[in-house]
Length: 477
Ligand SMILES: Cc1cc2nc3c(=O)[nH]c(=O)nc-3n(C[C@H](O)[C@H](O)[C@H](O)COP(=O)(O)OP(=O)(O)OC[C@H]3O[C@@H](n4cnc5c(N)ncnc54)[C@H](O)[C@@H]3O)c2cc1C
Image (cartoon, rainbow, N blue to C red; front, side):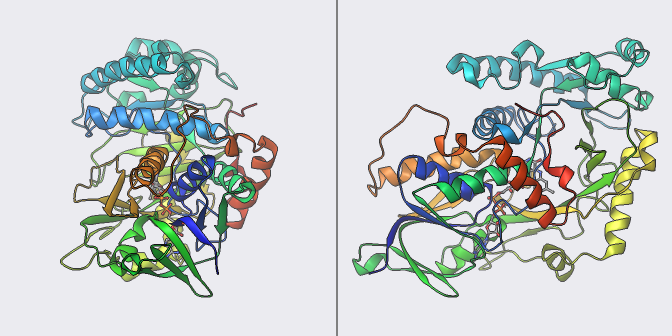
């Protein structure tokens, strides 16, 4: 008789891999199906949203959740965190006010202190009193006269390097520097893949597409679901759908109907000239979807920079946000977006969108206009449960017994979802879990930095990106 797994997980994105490793930490055997040749191969991520400061429009509650979840994920995958701050500014043309952002930052400092009180190891964003710093026009003028620092170690040094390049006359003051860090998806993917391959209780099937799920719950068998692939059928007691923007296709095969949005977006890889000192991530706020939506410049190693521009000719796309309608559980993109999702980008569109992105940042940092295309775009579709496109914290749904659907919107929610699924599996009596107070996962902790360096570089190159995108700007011991 073929093996019966406790849990079958469809999708080896950040959500699926974290669920698998959390289950394995408690000795619960599971099998992960990923159609691609490596894990964490879906939509990109580059920013650890430890406070939601890229989103002036979301609620304080969402900001707190983003901070808590980001800290949890950073503790799980420390080698994927790039500890450089984020420069947050509002152009004078925009309606947002610095006062609103500032009062939210105060709230976040208090909340961060609470998290540290709960567990001192949560202090991964530096001391709470240094979580953010405001810079007035006078401060900026003084810092702009200082020398550039090759590898900044204080907020003022980071701000000095940035402000010497930026046309700050275009920005409202004060300007903010906040400890929201970079997040390297290649490094997270490498650490997770190495851990999954080693873990006794995980069976990782890459290059394996799930074609169909059969519900056998009524047949009084020792298992509840059959997972079908081209070559085999796998039996599992508990089913986890973590197939990202494709969660609807699994729901469809189970005749479950749920409202959801899916959104296609892209960021662009550019190469610039060497500059004398490292700069923080740069954010120039603006209303999403308008021609002056937010611009985001994310620094990587070796003069590579990733750019988001929240306008339709850069990161967003015409008809890029689609909704499930009537009985259609899985929304569908039009032909042009579907082709891009299948890596079929036209060279002239890569060039024109990357150049638009460079010019967009160049409005605020004129010397950046000399940057050029540095690689293919980083793109993908993400799911947003329900019908609110501004939702940033999706979690998990349990539409019927023995079935969980992960609905994360930001990568930072992955551990929360994994723990919610563990609790549900226990509650439904599939397994008795011995609760542990240990937040870390030994399966991840035993993966060496050297092995992460090697595999993350291979993953970047295999996917057509410069190997430099797998390195941290601020290297960790
Ligand atoms: C441009 C862009 C920028 C972003 N930036 C950030 C950021 O800075 N910070 C952040 O936190 N979040 C960011 N996000 C969101 C983040 O990418 C997603 O939240 C996250 O990747 C979702 O992870 P997931 O595991 O749920 O889904 P996915 O990563 O989509 O994983 C699902 C996996 O399931 C596999 N799969 C699907 N169907 C099947 C099947 N039938 N059989 C086998 N395998 C299957 C897919 O191949 C895929 O690997 C960004 C998203 C985009 C689009």
